[in-house]
Image (cartoon, rainbow, N blue to C red; front, side):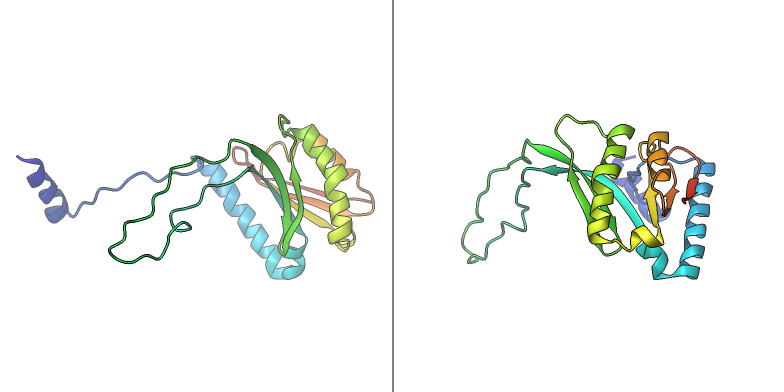
Amino acid sequence: MSSTSVFSVLTNKLNKKKKFSKWVPHLMTDEQKESRVNFSRNFLRRFQTEQNDFLGRIITDDETWVYSWDPETKRQSAEWRDFDEPCPEKFRRKQGALKVMHMIFFYMNGVILRWPVPIGTTINAQYYKKVLQDKLRTAIRKKRPELLESGILFHHDNSVHTARAVTDVLASYSGNCWSILAFHLTLPLVIFTYSLK
């Protein structure tokens, strides 16, 4: 039987379609999925009660690589030309060799802090704690001082962010109510709440 016949039988008679795998960040266990669902339900419940007051208190962060420059996309380099003119030529170029890790802290209306991590520095619990102490608190005082009164809800997503050194420094901020809304990618849901005096 030819490959064309096999293809015809699969598609026309058996109604099959070739589907490719989809990339996912990682496979989760049922327990981890349940943890995420519970976290989401609690999050929605709290939003229904507090509305935008709740959302406005959330600060989340992410680390991302920023390249020294990005090459132009095909669409960006497109030019209007006559039909009989040849397409413009362009050399294939790679992203800039220099890249810098940035820690970005943001809330529902924008960025609170964008911090470039010095080249060669590893973002571990000690470094993250230092950024929280030296940079983030100052940025919050300048841009969102009302959060220091109403309380800040941190949404963190990895073990560096919820390490003991980090949670201890958040607990040391007196006069505020700081909460960490966290679920780990590989661990069950963790929510830390601090009522500070």
